[in-house]
Image (tube, rainbow, N blue to C red):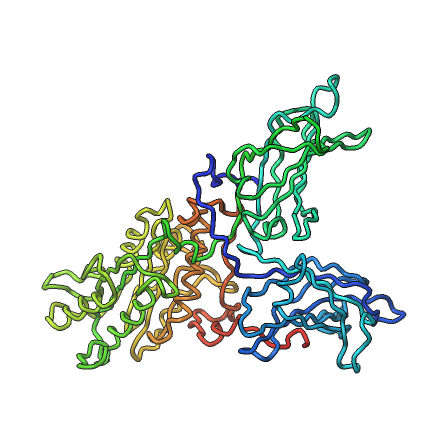
Length: 588
């Protein structure tokens, strides 16, 4: 837990509590007296696969599966299943219990199943629903013959992996050891309050005891937020305070039913005496440090208030080309460059888009002499602080139309990339800005080898680079700008030996293939940078969330390529279908 509290709220409750509108239901599943389908060889190894369908999607599709438990006919599955909190279209859930071959988890035999309408789960008393399993493939079965399945359904808010981290303190805790021994040896137990008002232990919810003190500072503990209160900040939480006694058994000091909202406020919480009617003050509890450890998403950084601003810079290649389509004047259509600028810019058009709204746009030209100047420029400013990609197109076309550009034969990145790094590092320390450099070119870059140290430097800045290749060139020389990908050595400078810490570069051929580079790869690169720098979303400054202490950067999006491939163009089709669920994968 070291380091968890550096970003936690340190004063009393000025932060805003998060929205508690529930959008999911969490299912806890256990079975009783399952039929043993392993015969004399042992007991079944059960697993539960959960399927869902509704009027709009009449075919069963797999929601998720629990773990399997070996040799157990009354399993209590530890893994929770989450499904959407939506009741339109008569949604139903199928709980399919199978006996897994523990030598090969892909092989199994059906024990039985049951179908429960989602509406019944929501309306069940205490959130519990018990049903008998049947096996239709074997002509049905008598109620209870194959065993029963119980489901607890809980409305949840938040994310399944949210981790509540608390470092509590006690204030004037009552002495249970008598006047001769000084003070109690107190410890705390946190419990979940079920809809039936029962109290349930929570994994990780017990502190070690603190010896001989009435004002203890308890060791920090961590609990899954869903396990404690389903992510609901005003759902009851039960806390017990005990006195440790190795010789005669532990004595309860007091208890309190409170809420996570009250705990995070850092205000003292009065304990009640465990014996009703006694005039004894057990003491108080308060939060010393703590918060909710959460792995942030790209959307967290794009949420108000204090969202990370996205800035887009276009680098347009004005070098000589024989492809007339590149700079053509078309009365009712875009030329290839205009199309690339427009298509890329449209992803940052407004907050409703998948990438959000860009704060502003810049456009630079390279590979030419501009406005009659004698020197060739590879980073000539055409416009800064523009409102949208359309204004960038206007700046680009103005240079072509008014013949203010003298095209040269070579195109270099040696000036453009350092400029992008300079712009990106403005307000870098607080994560207030992230820069996207989009290079539009009709041919391979001529200084690919020299660009390697620049890309190594770019990996340490809040910057991503996308190269859009248009026209007929095969862009073979782009292989020296290979991305940082498993199975391929990372970019490395020959002088210092430094390697790129993350992948900042993607290449795509044709501006009509930008979906995956911008909606998948760019957010991943963004999160890798924020993880490396340990920068929390600005929207968390008024909330109880803190970053994990460990590296939480996302895994690589693409599968491992052939190590002999020096450059692999992004395969849009494969990436787009990587996470598509396969119906019947668990054997429905």
